[in-house]
Image 1 (spheres, chains in turn red, cyan):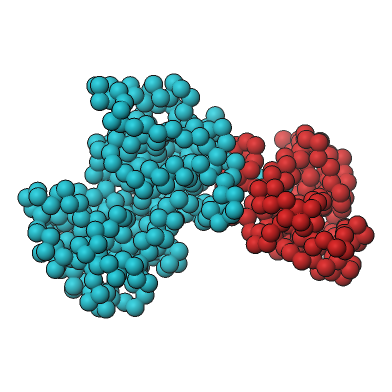
Image 2 (image 1 turned 90 degrees about the vertical axis):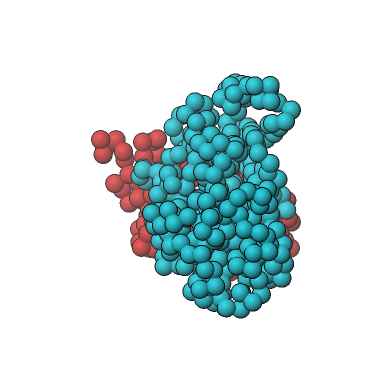
Length: 179
Length: 318
């Protein structure tokens, strides 16, 4: 087990991401921050005040549940309960920052893009992820990255957040070690 | 995505045949999943791709408008293709057995069969002989699990709990699959069920299933949190053992006078279609205590959840 980010580093990483987003956010289009359930949702909520501090006016906040958009029913966590999408604004003509914790194969993001498109036609969608661990299976790249790290398929990158896990940290586990 | 705990899944059933098969956890998992599906029906594009490319066949060997439509719409909102099997025009009227019919339909590449059949046990029988998922949409006097699930969903939505809740089911209990399914689900979740109706339609034998039986509706009114009024099947009215309509209305009909004797927040349910003025007075059916239309709306979310969970379990089983 390796610690990729501790609590202080995680906070600094989020601040860095917020500044990067602020430097490209448009002034004349409403900005929406949308998190992918579950940890992307928490990260999105954390990014909001940081973005405001960096000078971005965030007009909307929402949460996407991508369960129903996955390309393989068997990849859904067996006990994951569908919680539904909570987007109570019209995404059409907004500048959406899509937030997730870890970018891996790209399949979650593909599903999230489809889910968003079903709700309207955003002016643009940008992807912000806390950790990009590589190993993409689809042509999807992030626009804002907190931490880039090369991994192997037998690794697991675990993002823990105060709100859901009681602690702020990012860990890398090696399943080969465990065997 | 981060790690997924490889715990044993709560839901592993590819068939939904009867509420009596389900554990408390399984019932609650369906209700939680249905809650997640409610949002889909509020969108402008009321569709998600979860079952895209899957085929759902609706096999209804008995009259039904709302259950069939509800299943069809549920399947369509999940992006499945649906086909309707119409009994009157099909080979069953030429003597083909249910199983032969089902096997022929399955050979065309169907993923889920939704079956309504007059014979108790028909869905179970089908599930044992086909490879696809089977969802029971009512079999004889045996079970109607999705009706029970939507009733449970509606009760939870309005009451927030099941434990200790007093629920009356009123009407022709003996011949009702809805009553049996509701009774079973409510007991699994810890509610206290009272069955109400004339002695010929509510035999004491139901006490062995753990329910209280009474033939005096008025005496139990004040203690009820939920009252589920079953539809009186007029086609049975001529059968012996059934009181006259006027007598039934006088003793067991829900009306304004009876409602006034109930708890102020009592929930009045009905599985539809309502015989206005018989089991339910029109002003009560349309009043603030009634959840009739809410039940219909919730039925859609519950059926989406059932189709989704069964198909997911089938996919996980490979």
